[in-house]
Image (cartoon, rainbow, N blue to C red; front, side):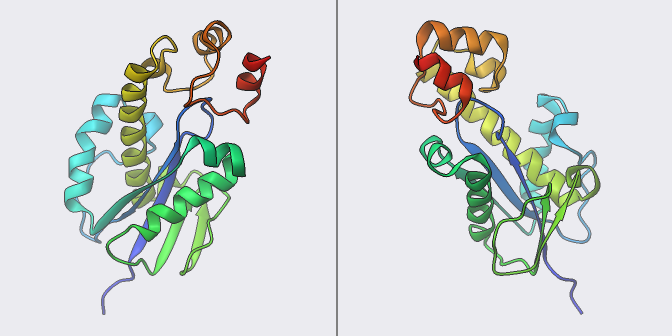
Length: 189
């Protein structure tokens, strides 16, 4: 009997003031051999980038999902994150039998879903998803930094650092800033 296909899902980018929220879904085989899978925040950028090709090569399926800034502003960050998670799972080339989601909120899917608090530390498929989502979002924020210079997006990845808040006050929000977030609203006054 073959074992059930379990997808791990995680998100990156709920807290930033700018850019999309990015999610990933990963189905790992039972016999995967990827050393160092853990919460992406516990790894250096170099370690994460080294793991991405291994995850992509060894997984049975992987996919990214996202919610854009206008969707975050329209829905709210939680609903936009759940939408991005749905999109990642729906984009998988193989339909999972069960989905494990990091955290305590689950998207509505066509299969059973279990939330796992700190799942990126305990479930390898969630850790793999965490790494894919983080690397993809970080790369995108570096591209956005070139399109919207002056905010430091490549450095802080859109998070509300003192430097980012100061740039918002001086430059005003860009097209990629989340207008539903209070520090961005304050910069509009």
